Image (tube, rainbow, N blue to C red; front, top):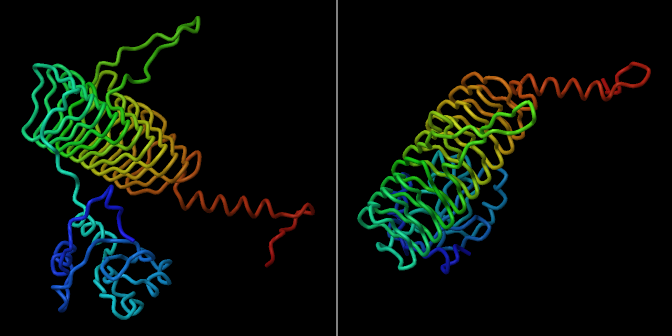
Length: 347
């Protein structure tokens, strides 16, 4: 069973030759065979395209009814008779490209809904769609071909590049965003940063947050994630950076290109991430630290110090992954020690 057409209209049928071209794979014959869509191995039928995601799905591959499947060369022998093997080094990437072929992103329906509120001096690009009860503030600039969903808000003076999308209830203020930016449902960009000074009497005095948020081209911000504006300078998310749902980015954080920040991560103010850093779920980063390019931070890690480039860290406090695993192994040995002082482990 493929995608539900009520929610995901399918563009098809599509010939195998076009599918192979989109995926960048070669085929021998059968180029005119038509396919209706994409589906998981276990649900696919003869008119569907599927892919193999790792060896743990080999049993499903052997039993699949899919008409064609993207596989690495080593798994071709496991493709059942009648199913076309589409050989590629990156089956999931090929599948993603073909899924987009069958289910392209919805194009904007140009126009402004009668219930939307658009400031007289706002600039709206050609072909942009503005949905019900959306609000576009004074002096805002929205590029061509954008989609502003229902109840979404673009604050006064904000800039949103061409081809960007604000889904329902998303909001941006004090923000300059590039092209192809996506704010998913309920995302909040440009909020006041968590900056205050506590007096001797315990009173919290707010420090005015007078910076901006700068979003590079292709940044995506997940549902109910928050990106605070800078306190003085700017909060900057580099081009291609992706935030999962429920992520908190503090004021003056700066990321490089293509960073991936997974659900429930919290990054405190003035942290700097290099290019292509990955921060796994529920990790927390203390303020004013630097994480080098291509470093990876494990799930639930507590990062309190700088992380060198291309280093994997795990644990809390976070250490390099190999050191942490050795420490865990030693802890297990200690826990297994008998009361008489001898090891409880079998030689």
